[in-house]
Image 1 (cartoon, rainbow, N blue to C red):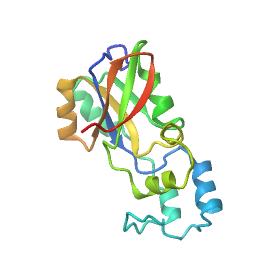
Image 2: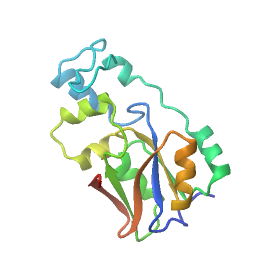
Image 3: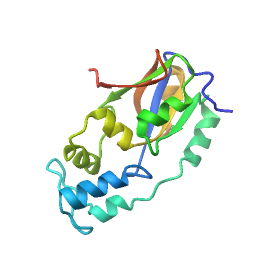
Image 4: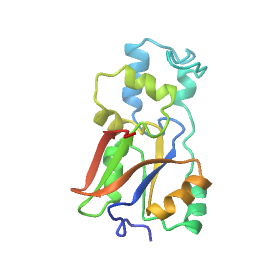
Length: 180
């Protein structure tokens, strides 16, 4: 059973990409897109740093993938210590649910690509990173916690990102800028 009991400081947090909002943050996204920006469903998402041809409607209706096939494949190759599906509550609320006492998740911002859609939503809000990463999945749909020795195996066999690590501390999530 994958219940998080074997998670220890030094373990690695890997993120499997999301396809979009999934089940997360639709109320705020609609407020931003339709009320604040006065966009319509067929309008393209206006992203200065992107050539995105994605429409507002297609971004909102992206299908939420099943991570089960990927996780079954990984479970055969490595010891998965913890899993967190990033839905309502984002990384901030979901990741701590799998952590044992005195284990803290440190997430390095900028270690995975943000889609033009998430970048646009972030640019249009007046909230800080913590709230953004609590309302939205910000491009990570599932987290997988493994030992450092198993992290490379996962990164080589799946589309995933090394997004953080486990440290000793109070159960929770700390967001920090990417270190060089």
